Image 1: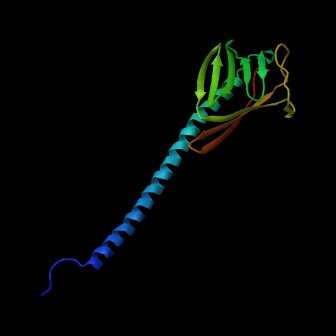
Image 2 (image 1 turned 30 degrees about the horizontal axis):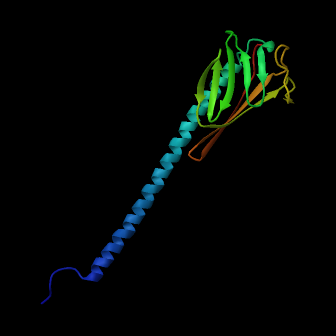
Image 3 (image 1 turned 180 degrees about the horizontal axis):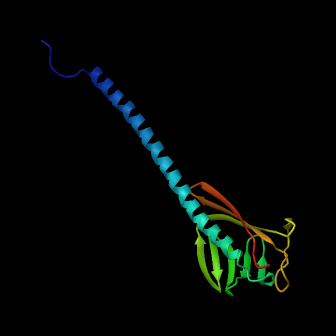
Length: 165
């Protein structure tokens, strides 16, 4: 007479099949979560970066006169706009700061690099731009920003041409 139940071999085979299925499902879920995290981090950085760069480009375009650029270094740009607001763009730690009339605000976070490059009317790079009290020789400002979050990097670059000189 045969007893009812499973043999040890049948149980081992079932456990192995369930283990293989669980491994495949786990791998698919892990890959999906990694892809979602990558996309989320990337879009978050891109969104913040675009907002920051667009604001900087728009405000640099509004420099009041050629004599109103007071600092033009690779890491900082300072000027007075058409509304007589003193604006400074700089980076502190991982924050892109916008200081307006002495009040600093964080324009973007997760900034790993900020670089300004200046060009004259012929399109040549200016190593040491003339700044206030004289008229600046800057005719175009290039902004290079790098954002880093959870190992993901986003590089943004844009040019701004001040229209009042």
